[in-house]
Structure formats: structure tokens, C-alpha cells
Amino acid sequence: MMCVENLAAAAASKLFCGLKPDEVAALLAAANARWRAYARGETIFLAGSRARDIGIVCAGEVCVAREEIAGERSLLAHLSAGDLFAEAYACAGAARLPVSAMAAQDCQVLLVNAQALLAAQEPAAACAAVRENLIRILAQKSVLLNRRLAHLSHRSTREKLLSYFAGQAARQGNPFTVPTRQEMADFLCVERSAMCAVMGKMRAAGEIAVEGRKIRLLPRRGPNA
View: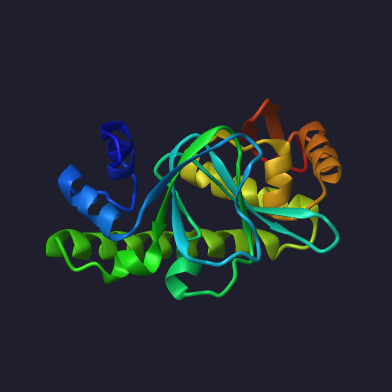
């Protein structure tokens, strides 16, 4: 039996947005939901394992990454409470996960069997709402993926950074907050030290102002400035 605190955390997730606690409880029971706690650095889903469950972050943070053959890691997502992971693979019925999910810090995760959730029939209105929420989440992540591909389409590290910074400024305002340097390098598929060197040159050239994880894009100087 799921405790009241865990049920409240599940109900606050994007998947169950708009549902009543009793509706959430009924759906979790139908979907064979399991509550799990993970320590920082612990693996939640390992690449190559069966794609069966939707992961819901209820507390803490989770990162999703692709491990390359050469041992390099490509960060795909950094998730916090309310976010989902592995839902696309689980709903698509993928035989194996191509990515891994790890606890970025101590976290609590709810694992929900995707096929059982989609097959649930009662409560009818709640089932329909969950499917609508899931479609919306998948669509939003598709948009984010397209944005990332737009950054990665640039050849140089400087061009990737400028594209990424412009996107963050458009969404957050200027200045804006970025993730850690390693996470940003992983997201842009560049080497961290090389990226930091380019950021140093951009700062010296007056293109950006940097204060920790806060960055401001500066007006471009004219030829006679």
C-alpha cells in the first residue's frame, strides 16, 4: 500500500496532472506501480535492459545519458520532481533501452508499467486524462529534441554555444542560468575543457558575461566601437 506522502508526490507529477488522489491511487494499482529510493550515482535503468516501465521522479534529480562505445557520455536530460523518463521507449514497446538513467542526487522514483497503465479502463475519465497528459509530455519532449538538434547542427563549439545561449536567453531572459559545465558539454556533445576555453575567449571578446552558472549575452560591438 502506497503511503499518503508517496501518493501526493505521484499526484503532483506531470503524468497525473489534473487527477484526484483517489483516481491516481486506482491507476497506480492497475499499473503495478513500485516506489523506489536511489542513492546519488546509483543506476535506475541500465542501457540494454527491458523497456517496460515509465519512471516518475518524485523527489531529487535524475539524469538520462547515452554511454558511447569509447566510454564517453552524452547527457540527454537532467530531470527533477514531477518529470518522467523512459516513457517513449516503454510506450513504444522497445525491446531494450538505448540509454541509462542514474540518480543525479539521492532521489525517490515511482516505476509504472506502461502497458498496464495504457490498458487500464477505470476510472474512465482519469484514464483518458492520463493518456492526454502522456501525449502532451511526449510532444513537448519532441520539441526539446528538435531544439537540441538545432544546436548540434552547428560545426564549431563556439557556434553551438552561441545557438544554445540564444535559445536559453529567449526562454529564460537575459541573463539566464545554465547547468554545470560538464552537463552543458555533454548536452552539446563537446569536450568540457575545450568548451570552457571557448567560453573564456567569448568572455574576453565581450560577447558574454559569466558569473558562476549565470550568463548574460552582451550586445555585439560595432566595427568602430
